[in-house]
Image 1 (cartoon, rainbow, N blue to C red):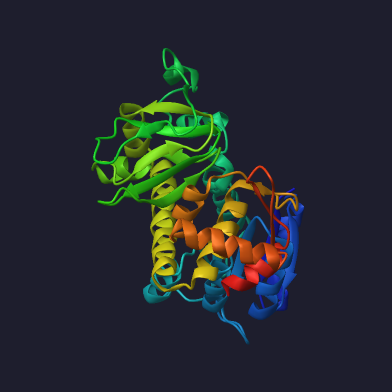
Image 2 (cartoon, one colour; image 1 turned 180 degrees about the horizontal axis):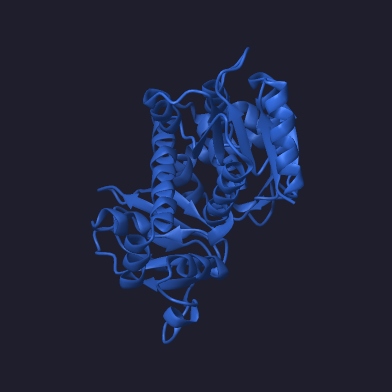
Length: 353
């Protein structure tokens, strides 16, 4: 059962709207003002938010701003309720990221059509749509360009890469999109002295090489397998067909590109201004977040010191010295085989603040 958060200060409208939604088999959570609405959105994680604009304490614009600032709920579909029909109000709401508008008074059909439309669209744009080969099949099915993944996977092998094997090189022209099925992959740039700077880490469920394809340029870095890995290969022609013929696929890819740019900006700022201890702490937590998504306490980093130093953006000698300090402080445990166990994640995260 889909859960809808209804934020409305007018009691009559709130009661009537909630009743219509509940009769249509939706679970409805209500909030009497914007402040309470934001709190319930974080607590309840609704599938859709319906929100009035003119409210005390915090208006609808403040609500959507707060929602989009919270990683837990920022992708929740958002419908505004408004008694206003001024074009400026519509434009302001859409600029803030609203998905739809309902103008008061509205009837039950208008309400349910808007809700159904937004929920269906959200299904296509869920972050997990590409978490496996079935995700790629779903994208293709939605684009209506092909019926199943099988139609583009025929005569197309799943590429297997051994540890340290190059997947693609900087300055080469992209002719395929990669989808990681298993293993770990990193991308990096190399300076004139041969030193590597890791630009991004990838794990199963990630696309690889999409930036160069979207930009229509050569690869800006080199991709290398960090361990034995399997990657599905989608030919450039099929990627272009998906991207150009379906706006949902295009939006998803653009979101991935925007996220990538934001993460790289943050990473570069950290390399420029963070202290040595903070750089190493950030690298450890970054690896934990990327390769330990369930946040298991027993996470162990199996990576040589050169690679880890490259991710942290520090010299190998500085990394080793800092890891030694972290071990003395009981933040990590360096095992005999060279692997690193994070033993106090919270304190390491505190070093990042």
